[in-house]
Image (cartoon, rainbow, N blue to C red; front, side, top):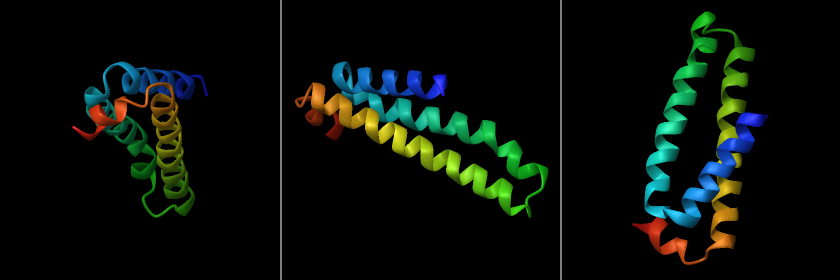
Length: 85
């Protein structure tokens, strides 16, 4: 849970102060999380509960990052121009 708080804080800060760097950070961060959690799938690829846990983790990350982006845009609406670049 603490990791999610830091994740949202970093993304919100990036959206406010460096919006053009946000997409690169999110892509790299998600890649690290996917690779780190991929071991769950390798243990038993046919185990449905492992695949569900993996998907829920990814979906939770997407929702968390969306909230952080929304908070950054609310704090600095001008950052939308930087996010589009």
